[in-house]
Image (cartoon, rainbow, N blue to C red; front, side, top):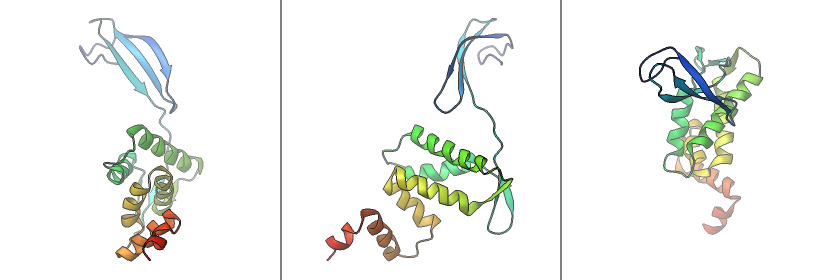
Length: 156
């Protein structure tokens, strides 16, 4: 581990702590400049490739998925830690399948189900694009389903 202050490769681990997501946080001290810094370690697990609708395959891209979820959750009371936990859960589900390739649609279905539990507005935002709602009636129907029909009664 290189010191971020002096680039020395002689550092000592002062303290180790495990976080709730299975990662390890280490507090380190540089032997050369005496500065302290923290590092975060996370196990690298293999995730399957994603089979696209057009027949192409590409590696699973956590950052790409994170960007889409952040857009859906923008200006909502959803914390970054909630988003990261959701992503960790999605990755874990994909890894547990044990398959080298999964359809992109499966990932989208997992995301949409997770957002539905997390925040209804973020879910609707994501669903408009992912489910391809063509008009306001389709969006209204989805909102009515979320509200359990309350909107349909109030609209009469």
